[in-house]
Image (cartoon, rainbow, N blue to C red; front, side, top):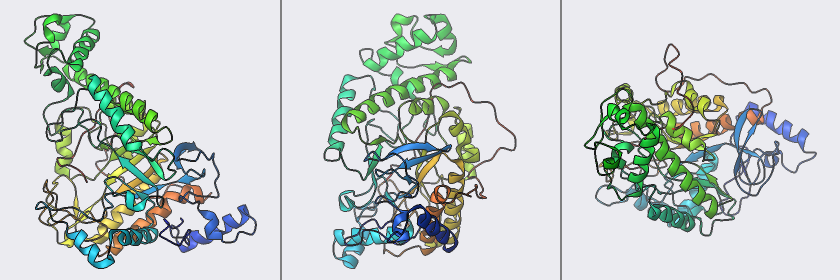
Length: 508
């Protein structure tokens, strides 16, 4: 991988490869390119792509399936595995009192935010990190590292799950305006990988007891989304109000009165299927509008989806996303057994994550990006009490071991094009505004590195590129994350639409 160009250095020695594989790669590069000035230099393009394998160069990042394996492709036309890091910013995480301890640390240590950014690029080279992920300060790294942009287009209330009315012309106008604003000055930036549309949107019932059918039903009769819902229900039930009333209790006695009704209560066996189908309808509208707006504002850059909550995706919403996005992004953390049991009790038909998202991969022939993941450890001394859903391990070495194992499982699939750890810096012990107080970082608030974890990150870079670099590569041993059923589950429902969810706290 080349240096993520901190000042003078344009390229770096090999850092993604161990000693044995390094020798093999240098030999391959020597064979592929007669008398190179530097074998290591010839292995990587400017953006960190694997140079010995040449694909079409378009001047911007894109995706391509090569020998039944999805890859991101660099602007220069080479395979790229995005080993990313979220929340790369000099403030770290501001605590609940408004203090930024990490900013105080780095100003004392480096003298300025710019000098800190240069130092992080040098660190990233040694850590194997090649992408600036979500929630980051992008200006400090402009023109020096591949990066992503995070949007917030749905006007999403995390606590309730409500969003704006996706059929309202005012919302469509706002999406167009926001994408134009976000893309300003970036139209031809080759370092921009793509845009995340939103984060962990709420599509169906989860730890919040209401879903999109409830939210649209409670809208007033003049609202465009409510009008669309009534017309959609008439179509779904073939204009038979009695059939609809067999599934739902409502104050309305006919279709004409349904626009004024504000609640729908499940009654019959078809109610849940209708809720799921409506989630798919809402998702398809959302992804159609946002994709069209992004394509108009940023035609050279990818649509990276909405960072689904990994365990809370239903078929209808996944199907809707796959019809529109370039990459399906998923925030996927290992949950505690208690949290996994809760997921199983809340009702909808969430796709199982077993066998490294096998159900998702079989449903959508799209590249997947793990847009958030990570583990926290007790030996950090941090409380690690919020959020309560994710696993807490004992030691930093366990964090590192799980990181390596997870990456191997992802690469084995042939569908995952990258994984972005959350995040660079630990959260404050007293908690940020929403209470998160965990050891997610690569470094402490004193800027001390967790060396076991960063060594694992460098190994992950090697793992990600191995299928391109080694012609004899075969999937490596790994233990898939999460519950693994001992017997096959039911067949997925026919291709249609689907549903994800959100953490009980904002992300960043």
